[in-house]
Length: 582
Image (cartoon, rainbow, N blue to C red; front, side, top):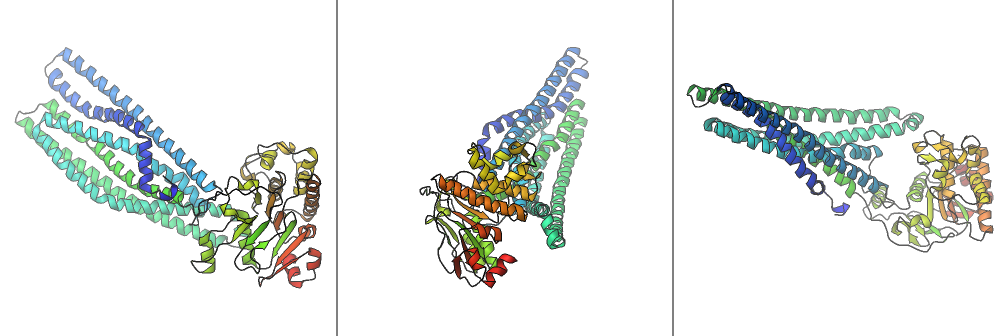
């Protein structure tokens, strides 16, 4: 089933169908456990009546052996059955987490609902586990039914009146517990949602704590987290209260069952219709009824929580926005890049193929919009509608040789265009792996120019292992400027391609920035001299150093007008000077 048609219940049905074999095996083994638990007091009663009361040693040996086999059956059944149920549950947790990771990391992922990274992490780590718990609880629930049947059969065999009394009280108790279940479901759903919200707030607060301190927003962010945490705590109390009521009702019902069995059993013993051993067996079995009864309650409780969690997992998987395109235009290093953005004076805004162009935007709102477009390749229609205040607002588009980048196959797009967002994302591995991945390094001359054009040549002088230096996850063992240089080298590698860069030198010092600008010119000249073409390079930046090195500068004024020129010529424009000088 496609993710767009996925619901929580269909997700649960699919999981149960996939683990059907493990669930059936677990039910069979766990039923041996519950049946064995129920038979232990029954066998003790039979031993008392037939072996001890009759003073028969052979019968005593026989019934003790039967009791030992019963213990072996129940211990082995639980151990093996729990292993099967837990293995199925853990397998489905892994599959769901893998599916979520593939979904949100797919290049064509365009969510209609804005989700913070912390919320996605909470759904992936918590809700997937709660969803898959239904596999283990289903195995325990059906085995509990088997235990109840064994108990009922023994009670009816031991004494008809006692058995009928117990069987009459138990369904009434289950009906009462069923009445409490909807309240628990509502409390559980709110609890899981609020936990996800507080986890998201905490994760995003920690991720941006330095930025928040810099702008003085730590108090507002902390208050937001405290509010989410208080809401989660309130929901937790409500859920625990509902769970406590159900557990209290369970104890009450078990007590009523045991009291009824004891009263009727004593009466039957007094009438001579039942022996002392049988009475002890009846009381033991009646008391054991609380275990399968509690398991059934837990199964219902886990089911309601699994449904609520599955709804959130399914909502995340179904929220993919527009489907990724499938077009595959011809790969050209000098591809014509263009921006079709509502509000620009020129639509589409075409950049000269094969040239190094820097785009300067005077309007901050338009600059942020272009930065997001150039980082992701497309704009969500919902975002455009919110910005323009109308449901029919047109989304901004990035065109590659006249083709909307959103309509190009995401797996094929890297062969046409390489986009490097402002935020540098590094992987765990060597510096070399972060630059070229599994591919081979270019020839020595090209490699030297590539490293200089990204500033990595200076960085390697400080790393003892050079290109083999190990980078920790997300580059935590590197500074911001070092991460940015490695990310820039990755964007410039791969031969002649059309490239889009967003503020690639914002985290380096002015000397390094000047070396990078000079290196970019030399790298492009080297690529052009080899006949392969330098490739179209579009940079969104206000760096005077990069502007001076560019072949052309496009200045987008606040009124939407566009000026094409060079940095030297535009320097006479006071508005332009204010934008690049701030």
